[in-house]
Image 1 (cartoon, rainbow, N blue to C red):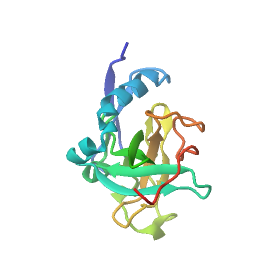
Image 2: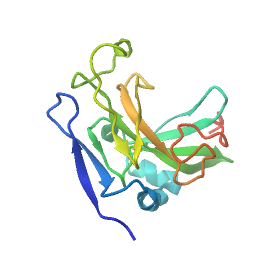
Image 3: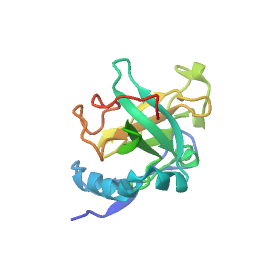
Amino acid sequence: MRRPMWAVVLWAGCDPAPVVIDEPTAGCDPEDDLAAVRAATARYADVELARADGYQALPCEADETGAAMGWHYTRVQASLDQRIELLAPEILLYMPEGDGLVLAGVEYVLPALLDGEITFDPSTRQQGEWAAPPELFCQVFDGPMEGHTPLQPWHYDLHVWVHDENPRGPFAQYHPGWRCSETY
């Protein structure tokens, strides 16, 4: 049975706009919420539906061992706001398989505020005070990290492998069973 959710409002630094995150009401058993995200994003198994709903393709990313994070289909505007919506992740993660893509997971992204401001400058790593990282599924987001592209600000993110089991765990950044393909 699905637990009701409430919006937890976290004030980010001195920014007057709150960070709003959909969060379970009690405990740290995220299984119901993971199942809800899986159901809400299952329709995006067809990447054309993701494109039609405004998700834009960004290249596949992999770590130094070749483990993939996947092709990122991103709702750019949503990835720049101060809101995390449990059932509407900012990024869908696809892995190349054959001539197409397979939906493997989702990613939540929140701009990291430095002294209350969004920043794109990679030199700001140690200058100022970063807002605390958000939490979802009882997991603290990774970061702050600089943007992966020039148009992405410093941010926090959380990868969630809801459509494919990751041997490193459901919240690992990279999946060792997948590799990026240059043919897709």
